[in-house]
Amino acid sequence: MQPGEIGVFHPHCPACRLAGRSSALAVAAWEETSGQGVLSCEACGSRYPVLDHLPLLVPDVARYLTEAGVYLLARDDLSHAVADLIGAAMPPGIWFDAMRQHVSGYVRDHWADATDTDGPPPGQSAALVAAGLKLAGDVSGPVVELGASAGGVTRCLADWLDAQVLGLDLSAPLARFASRALRGGRLAYPLRIAGTAYAERHVVTAPPAQGMAKVWLADAIAPPLADGVAGLVVAVNLLDCVADPAALLRTAAALLRPGGKLVLATPCDWSPTATPPEAWVGARCAAEAVPDLGAWTAAQSGLRLLGIEERPWLVRVHARATMHYRAWVIALERP
Image 1: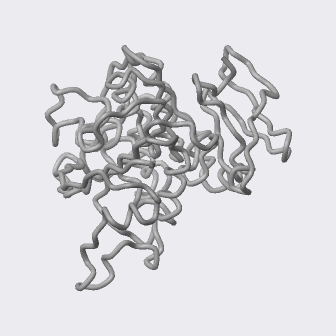
Image 2: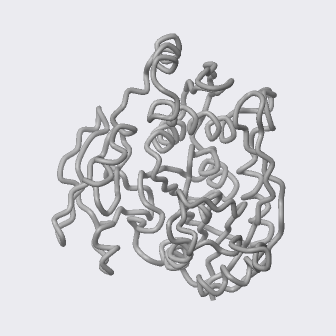
């Protein structure tokens, strides 16, 4: 198996995909020991790095590295004492603080077990997906998870469905953690206490007992995959976190083979920092504050609505704060 490849999921050039073409990538360089290499596209000449077995497959690699390269290249092996000192010395809100906040909530929810009682029970995201699968009825792989975050749901899907599962996420810290967690081991992560104060926590992870799972660093709106590759596409907490929600739905639908299912979960917590207000679904005035999200997702994706329901979703912020959401869970099918 080539670097980055997983079963039926062969990496395709995201730049070509964005231009309406389909071109599989080839290995230009690879070092198995370090998990580093380069994938290249013969059609357009684009090249994509692989670091620590994690391929960076975005349409504009230069732009990504300019804007977010620090997250991909920063050390993640600092001791707790050193990270604590650096976190206290650096101003709140900059990249180091943002990285730790991001990792804290998602890793705990995806990988901590029931013995972790510091906040809402872990597994909130997996519970949303489980509810969506019930609405969807019979499903089968291969599975593409858009916005895979820390990879815990990716592993659950592989186990639940005994399927090949590929997760895509644009967050380098989360994708890097997910990639390592899916290979198995004892991993440390920072759990936010308050402000810039973090405790060191550990989780023990294992590869899926059934199926197979991997994560790539990639854009959900320009996935580096061929159309029609998936029997199931899953997207949790993503619809209201992208610049173009309608484009996300069209892209997800294109990944499905005929009869494939799409499972979405979103709190519709719109923010102009993530989504331009003109792209919000409702939420702009009182008369349209709560839209018919099921009808809207079906119309935008061209898929058939199978079911929609509201579910509670609790997100830990720090030791003294938890966000209480009501998330829409939606299941759709490609005719």
